[in-house]
Image (cartoon, rainbow over all chains, first blue to last red; front, side, top):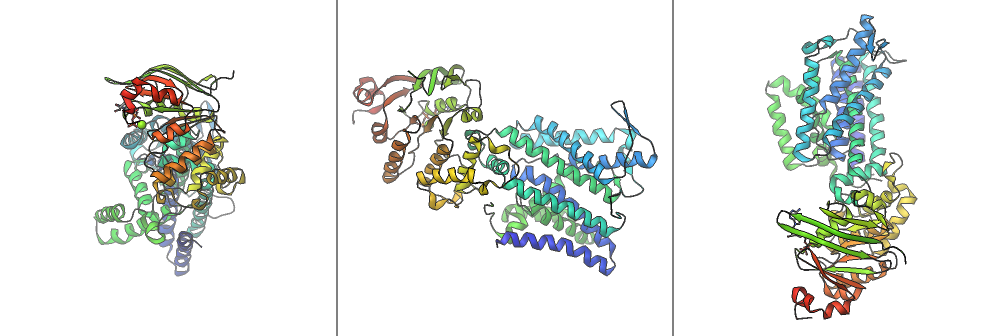
Length: 327
Length: 249
Ligand SMILES: Nc1ncnc2c1ncn2[C@@H]1O[C@H](COP(=O)(O)OP(=O)(O)OP(=O)(O)O)[C@@H](O)[C@H]1O
Ligand SMILES: [Mg+2]
């Protein structure tokens, strides 16, 4: 078996075993921590498709993450207030159903990504980074100045939303749900990366001229990847808001975009399980160092610098070596 | 008579004060190797880029098998059967040799829009790719990462990707660049075998290869074609000798 497969399996099993242990030990806080890691990993998996495979360094993914969060917040808020909302002249009730919320979050994320992508993907390099940052900040300021849904204060939801057949208020069951979503998305990503589309997307990162020369347009390819990426990150946003039962503009801020990039870079850019490794590491550091020092982010910055300078494949690269071609 | 595979009419391109293409017209007929020679900076690569669609001409037109493609982008021209190789290899360096060629097969089949099913497990993609690799003698390197290949192997891989496109015409920018004597001889033999498949517009500095392969030669100097004709006529042309070949040949 390939070394990376073993590392990936160990990560997947470790992320599953830790909350099971916490449950057995009667430490529900650690279950929440693992859930947080799984959700951030999911957001990172979304970003990794654009940033890693596609080479599209987006500093605006908080827009999709926050949009997913607000999809949850707005729908659940209308449901708990028993006030339907008006959408294009139609009266639509809110909902407390996760599958419906996820669908709305993903569609919204895809649409927003299509818009931002269509306007930014003609540029590249630093210009692309700045454009995605600018669009992300526009969404952020829009949320802050829109009083209907809490403005700067955000929205609180009394009860976590429901999923058919599960008690989502039980930390372990909610963890199992997020974990299942994460694994399903990673499975889909693995297939996507091996498909002709994934091959072309990776090739376009390394040599756009080559991809054009074999008859494949680079712009539509990247736009499709950006849309899928936005949808996955929005799904993670909906779950994240559900975990906290709270959504606020901070989910939309550029700090969040930066944090998602940190997760991908720490774990290993373009590695299938990179975001899982990165999210686990980030949540662990946040927990351990956050208790030791208020300035833990300085250590994080130093760690990041070390990864960029010495371990280009991130944690996965350090453990599993260079990426090898997958089939 | 059938239409030429490629027809270039009145192309102009300037970069500031430099006129890189000055009213260039040429055509590529079925079954021929048409070599384009000229000193460094004459505008050969600029011309190739305009033919391939990577660079917009200031004026003029390009027709591919009778169809005006001047307004089309690189990808659309490739889908219409134009296979280009680059002066400086343009390959996906982190992918394997086979993956690079499979990409070509997929592009030709319009298959980049398939999101499911592993590309490397699809015989319809892999079999033609392996055939192309066999033709350029890279079968043994199929699973090597391109970054690990020698320069000569990369030049041959470029050719394999072009072959995988099953094109109507090849447009090659210095396929022999940087190859040693043995490599050049091998590549020349490979190219000689290719023209039965599709005509080749060949930019090349290696005069042995040019005179061995070409059916016609055009000479480009300062963005202008100063002469076009069969190899013997070009060799005898006084203006060409003065401008380019020198008196050694
Ligand atoms: N993008 C560009 N911007 C400005 N000038 C350019 C550009 N591309 C090419 N040139 C100029 O146009 C002229 C033609 O360059 P080109 O690369 O086409 O020459 P070439 O015949 O391919 O030369 P070589 O044999 O060295 O490959 C040169 O003077 C070059 O400096
Ligand atoms: Mg050149």
